[in-house]
Image (cartoon, rainbow, N blue to C red; front, side):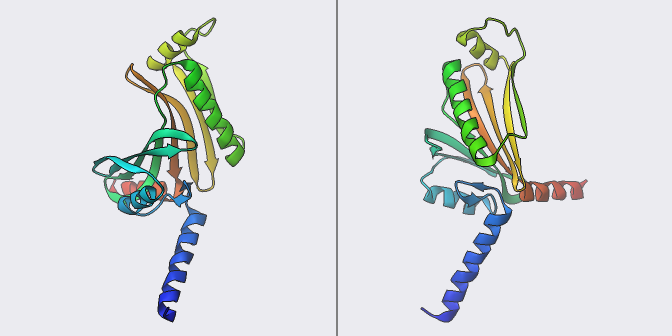
Amino acid sequence: MSMSFMMTILASFAQNKSDTSKHLSFKGVPINGTLADFVSKMKAGGFSNKESNKGIELLEGDFASYKNCVVTVSTMKQKDLVSNIGVTFSDCETWSALYSNYNTLKELLTEKYGKPTQSREEFQGRTRDIDDRFKMYEVRSDRCKYVTSYETEKGTIQLSIEHEGVSRCFVKLAYIDKINSEAVKKQALDDL
């Protein structure tokens, strides 16, 4: 192996190590770089393509011991720079299953990142004596607010219970890289 080739490898490793120390990571990969580069790393980690659409890639795979999660990797339209990752877990038909997913992930996140910075867990409608079925109705009616956030020096991790229309209820996890989100915001401010 030539000395220049070895120096190139070491420089590349140093660059990756530097990125890792500055950016929030998802599955050990810094949330940084172009969409194509990040997606390539996710594919190498076992995810497969589900859908592509102008600055957004949907991938499918296993995450945090949950099967068939959909990972949304997105960039801003103005800049091909990955800054946000979203994980949508499988749909749940019952409140007990939905809350179990949320609570398990919250416990794991708290173990990794410490006490949440913010947490709001409430139903905004009637709260006395509501059963599992009514809780799911409240989720579908957008009157269930379960959101927990973890602020780190590298970015924000946000866990929430979400719904899409009245048929889909699921837990969602979002990773927002601080450096790249600020770069995108700066570019938007410059445009104004």
